[in-house]
Length: 179
Figure 1 (cartoon, rainbow, N blue to C red):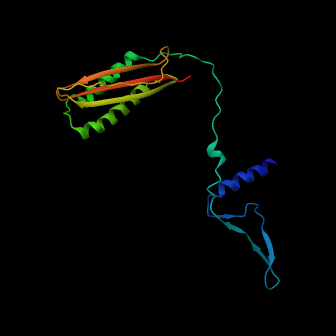
Figure 2 (spheres, rainbow, N blue to C red):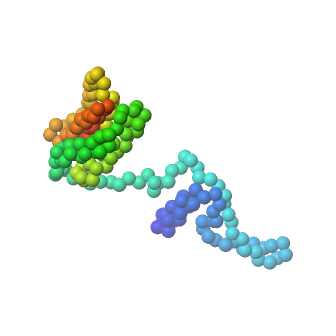
Figure 3 (spheres, one colour):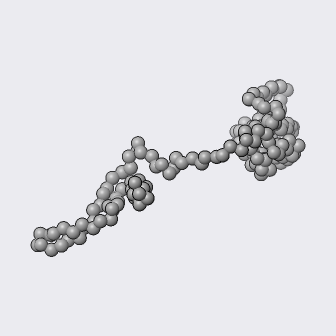
């Protein structure tokens, strides 16, 4: 198969997604009309893409080379992340009163803000998980636990608890090293 045949096949596959395509070989046909004159015609094919066929280009994956790096070159900055957690929770929740629906939305917003600010630190090869819990401050207690596979040499976390007169908030950021 030559390069031009491969290019034509790729073009044919990409054009399948359209409903009307001119002939791919781009040959003009000369046919004699009813009065003996030459008549130019171009064939047109109409069809839909078969769902069982997938575009090979969309499924190409990037093959990464092994780095043989078994540990982080830069440690996760726990103290800086603790400061980020304190600043974000204080800014968002300082004057808030506990309302279930509002706090439900705030947990999503705060966890996204925390995750974005920690990602801005650009610590390479760490997967980040940000979890925020907000609850009412009553005369009850609560225990919050988490479990995961952990490499104590490379993986770490940051945590901060915020309290005001009507609510409490717990924010955790887990940093798991990706080998």
